[in-house]
Length: 169
Image (cartoon, rainbow, N blue to C red; front, side, top):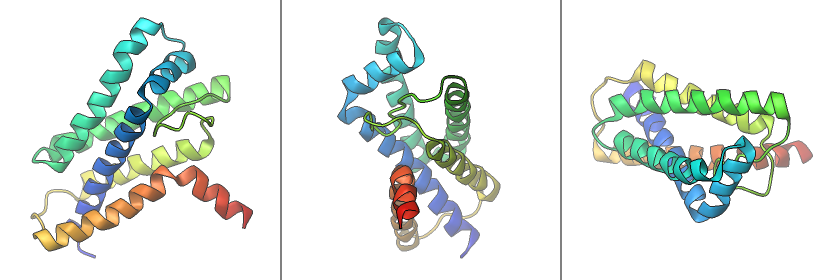
């Protein structure tokens, strides 16, 4: 597998994970906003500002990464994932179970698997930062890279459930 091809898989993967987060939060936006204020103890007025700001930031990063600004969007996405993961890890260790709704799932608590998933996504973004800078791929190769990235995105979004299914078998 060539370096530009792997870099494009990682770029598409990052953008698709961000879009999945936007989609999940947007589907049940009120529940996400309420969960954000309850889980992180912020006032409702701040939650009304923070929730749409977070969704907008994820969407803008995804668009930048898919468009001509991957060089700026990917490091920003890395900073965002690192920050989220640090905050979620701190709260998880300090308070134990709480709901994150990272991808819109409001019915289950955050788990160590969710933190591991975030670390793996951050590692993928870091790998892109190390690999990027090569020539662009032709459309057919970029389409294949996007398809592979979609598969990885489904695995990442459903990581908690997939690992638990594999544990039971």
